[in-house]
Length: 122
Image 1: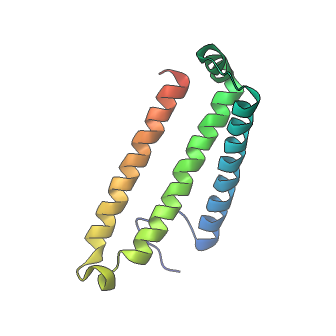
Image 2: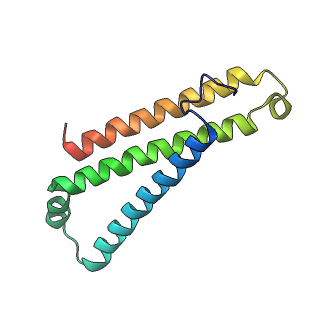
């Protein structure tokens, strides 16, 4: 089995499962939000604040945020290892791939921390 330092998962099957489970969580979150918005057409700031003041919505939103990060990481890693190669770039791809993955990882971490701050008011 080939291991790669930038691959935080264990195997292709694990990556596949992360993608599928995170997609299900994200789909459930989108359906919930769209349903809420459809059944509350004149949504006010007070109603929106009341919705997100309940703990279960915050936890569900946090789960969706974690799922988004995991889904994005697997997708970004797959794209970078498939398309950022010596053949496509014409140079050593390891440094370019590492820089791309580092920028994406830092951005995902920043969005995650920002999401926690927004959700929990920290």
